Image (cartoon, rainbow, N blue to C red; front, side):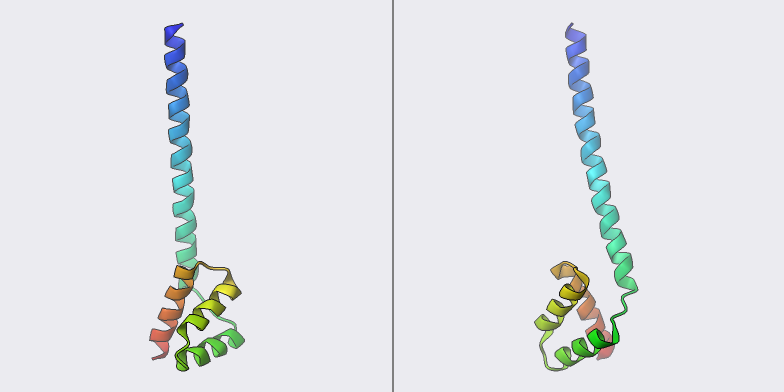
Amino acid sequence: MEWSILLLIFVGGFSFYLFAEVRSLRTRIQRLERQEGEAHVAFTPELEEEISMLLKQGKNVEAVKRVREENGWSLLEAKQVVDRYHEKEV
């Protein structure tokens, strides 16, 4: 009886550990997929023109906002892409 309880506790703990590891790995994979996608970012001509105009006017926040709206990215992802675009344009 005592062994079965210990075994049950061990299996439950190990299952929880595996669940946490799988969740962590999924998060890391998603982050890597987003980073890979960012490397090949190509704006539509209209969006690129709009972003270029906003950056020339010094409206970086608006440019980031438009990229977020268009692509559904997080604030950090959109800012990084706009910063790289701005560095390339300057």
